[in-house]
View 1 (cartoon, rainbow, N blue to C red):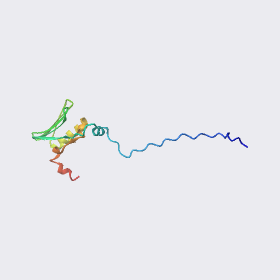
View 2: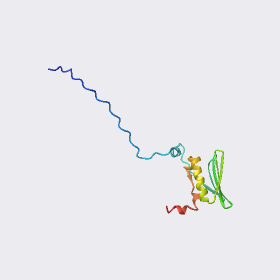
View 3: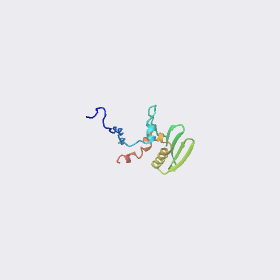
View 4: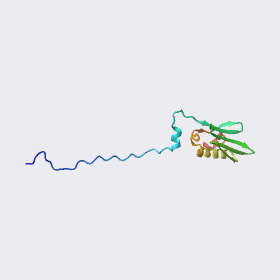
Amino acid sequence: MPIPYKQPWTRPDPPPVAAPAKKRTRPRKRRTQTMAEKGTEPVVLYHWQELLDSYVFAPAPNVNANLTERDGSWTMVVDIDSKHYVGSRPTLEEAFKATDRFLYLHARTFWLRSICHAVIAPWCSELEGL
């Protein structure tokens, strides 16, 4: 008859295996979008404004963009962090698109919150069909 307190040796239970990490079902946000959406202050939207025959975008003292018609072409002037950029395009649409891309590259936090209805009004009827 075997002794009751002496049992044959068995291996201890292995430690529990961690569950695999869940895959994200949503695409990740870009860092600049997250930075623009976060903040303690309420969300501020920056508007392009029409001033006489030109359009102005001035969301902060260090960011300023102007579109002005001179001699049948549109002159673009952008000041960002004390740097001055100038260019010209034959139409307002081309000038605005170039300025908008430039703001996207160099002042993205302001570009994310920009409202451009005043500038795109002349050709916005073409966009409705898309």
